[in-house]
Image (cartoon, rainbow, N blue to C red; front, side, top):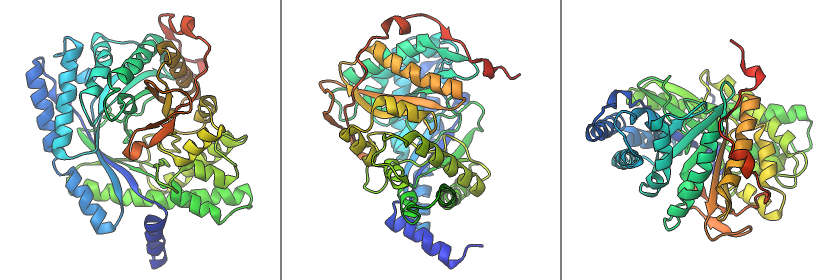
Length: 454
């Protein structure tokens, strides 16, 4: 039963504390679109997306108005395109035509982003995978809402260092070719280890091959709500702190559950999962870093940050799983620098470095996210940073990712504007010492011994 006090409390969370549903993401399988003829393949893809998602935005807006719950984004994820395009694409330019088709379809149905320009290469690359990866710079430069991801490692298979090295090159190239666009293409590109099949968040969303033909996944947010709740327990014990986080996460997730069920019913598409991550925005008061400060840190990055983040992440999950039987995706706390005003402040104050963010990755969702780095950073150095992040995910049996944004013409301390939810960020220092000999070895880092459980 929901009483009037709970209704009033939820209204307060929405009106005063930036509570929102970050995204309704419609996952669409494109496996039935596969054709050896490229023109027919593109036609099939366009028709499948525009027919399946034709009511997504309208339904999202209906739910917003009816329940007065802000739904920030309506998004689509599709089957990894390296799988879909393998039979028809003979060169990288062929894959770019698919990216453009995805962009047209996304714009036709009115969604904010479409994810799934993806390759899964944790153990090795097929010819199709490599062609897609090499097409990424052009694809992201010539489209507006298409997002790309590449999974280069997993706990079960290890890390494909050939793919890591190639991604270092592609990230560097993407930054160069998209330099004159309003949005750096690297902001739409993420490299994963242990990528989940059901992630609703961009840029890493894709529709996994284990999913149904179409599925509704919802991602909730709520750092502002969490911070406001913690102000009431300043100075209290860790026990009180943990209980407060759990109860607040429960309430946030229940809002997401309501939206997910309504969207599923109205669209006639099965409900998949709730991703209960605390995902920040550049808006004042909607910051994970501010939550960490409320826990007791002067800045995110101060001694104790990793411990505080571990506590926060665990309690968010404990509260969320009590509110929904179907929790999935990434679920935890995101720490993107450009999308979190508190993280930006910490970086500018010198409290936060890439190395500290890497340490924080061990205990939270994703990892080195939306980090601006100098434009002259070598591809091998980018690959080395990615390899470190992938190793954390592989060893700790968790999802990790890197979304690094080289900024041509910019150096440490310069500010870079990305716009909208992507925010802005200071260019952060990169370790100047070389890892070239390491990343230029060919082959794969083997899976850790604890991966062999069959």
